[in-house]
Length: 214
Image (cartoon, rainbow, N blue to C red; front, side, top):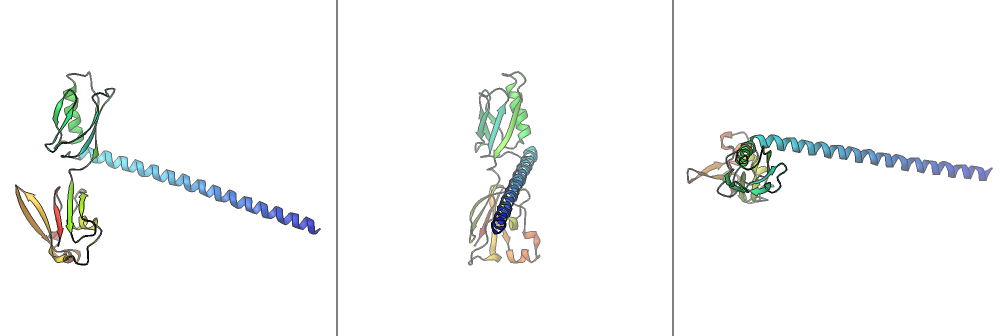
């Protein structure tokens, strides 16, 4: 009888262990599946955002472009936009790219290639956005160049730089901007703005703006 009870106990214990392992594996598979779905959804979301941005984004100097011509690998190129705003492509030589949207540039390239290729199908994708940058320097945790997001303000830009140092003069921050060939200074009192006072100081940024935290 004792041997039977011991044998039964061992069997029950083994079954319990096997059940626990099976449940754990099932949980891991479900978590992995959910993670994969989440990653795929995020990827699709990023692609949708990129597509939306490409339809309205205006190309600038130093941006990176991928220009693909269907079934024409010798003409397709990944090219940078030069400081003069132009790109170089086979058959077409120099083309003005800065100031155009990807769709507009696509039309220009298509029209140019019609002289050499029958019914060219051109796709233009912005792969690197380097022309829309702002700069933050001084008593800040992470000084340097930062991508300028749509409608970004001074306050939003400062929030991306990791916070102020203990020596930062928050009431004496200023913005430097080039306007019509001359440098213009805009004062920004951080303490006033975060308290809701003089919100007009929190202006929208433009590419090339420099925020100085003394």
